[in-house]
Image 1 (cartoon, one colour):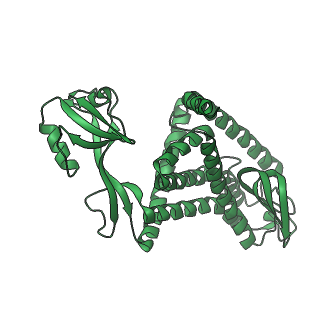
Image 2 (image 1 turned 120 degrees about the horizontal axis):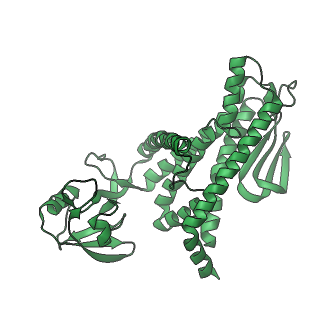
Image 3 (image 1 turned 120 degrees about the vertical axis):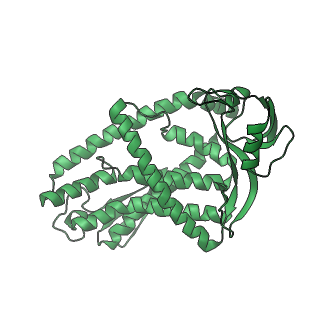
Length: 368
């Protein structure tokens, strides 16, 4: 439990710190004065001032922050102020945090492809790839299916069926389609093995008698340095697109149904998942961290007040109006947006506690 909390804080701090590092680096490149660049949040532990910038280490280890001169709209008459710079330069500073999170994801995916990431192995896998720990794995179990009733679970590795071994997915599917019921599955689950007997049956929404599982060939796939870097970049871009689509669907559902999907997790849920992923191994943790980094990038890019995307939206309005927005109106809008975001976090955290409450309580009891 303690280890999971520490790992979650380290992971969160890394993602937020890299995000703020992007703002810091671009602000310096754009000729803006950075008053403070801090790791963690105040109260301050100690700080060092170099070339007008205070570099601080703070007591609350949850990422970091950047204080840029004039970011609140002041010092408009001073050339090194955020407020005095062109809209284009301010845009670059605001988007740099998002960009750094995508770059971090690409780097993590790249490292993952060097050491080996858990992947679905297709027939056209690169001849240059190195594949280890191949397995035939169950990746879907339909709800209310015979497979679910028999106890087959997502992630189970199919070792044999009726004492028959299979070299790939197609031979196994052929066997399952031709063999008479019942069938005996030997499965590897975690560190142990289980045997489950399954017979086909009707599944709501599907024709014929089925088991209700989807199986794929999986393994850890690794590549040479340069190919791993290239695949890391491609995967990061592809995953960013997928996350954007997921957020669009989430927002649409929120507007249409006034409800948040049960799949959405807050800090508590992410902390629980961090511990579960860490138990699977280093490669899984790399992949998880990369996906979290992309989620952080997409969330911050949303055109919602208090987020980077919301500030960029005000820049766009400024360009269309050809004059700056009222500082008071913009500040009030961002403050209201921040309160809404806090409310959403509280709501999702409450649902996480309901969802994972028993698991968290059990972990606490095991410590004490």
